Image (tube, rainbow, N blue to C red):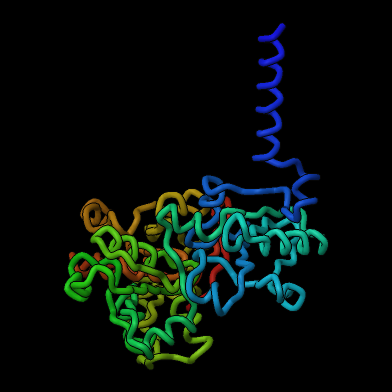
Length: 371
């Protein structure tokens, strides 16, 4: 009987401990904590670049003191203290996944904002309670704001790198003082990196859908640099807030070539021409989606093959030569890199790229806007 009583006492202790670690919705609400908590292993699949269209990640911390100097890439800033004034940033779709975070398990700002969103009728809400400290602990990159980059340039406290193609993007407008270092040429341009591995490095590219900045930043980390960040808003955010950093030549239209209406320097295919070909002569071109396989799997252009830009240099020789090739991605940045790589290896190869922003859906459907 004595042993039975001890066993029951242990069971009670275990059950009580379990509830303390994972409070019921009622006890969580009583403590001011939102009941739906998301851990890192689940959250990391939502917090990706290019940003997912089915989720909005919201930083509830103060903007100037916290968000600007380091936030989860792709997250938007809605400080809890300003929530009521910034509800215009929330999606119209009340069923869209919202994930709030702030400064860790002791921070209640994200929980407060989650309750406020629920009161507005949003039905799919979670809190990444471990927040920014946990994100950094797991070795993930921090993103900074345009304001932070501007101050860093003025103070010369960081080295800013533009990860986009040099001729087509960097030369036509970039953050003042930024060094052009395309991701595709990173390994050949490491002499631009400082000797001091503790120096602050900030990489940017074409915005929230562009993965080049993240890839370059991870390459720098692999080389041993310990203070690496991304400016994920990139040149679009800079230009929107501070104007163009440099002016380049205007795009001009080329004469139609082989049924393809080219643009830019003859390296792009116009959106109108691309859509007309897909409608009337889809078998007259090859389309290569040069995004990563996991992006490609979530939706692509009907008939497009997948070959990530990182694998292109090794595999380009196996690509067919009997028809023109068109490269596509989310923003035109990686597609432009693919074009540059192929032309560097085989100048006579007939290739083009879509200099456009594409929002991919299932079953080959997509929205497209000419850059």
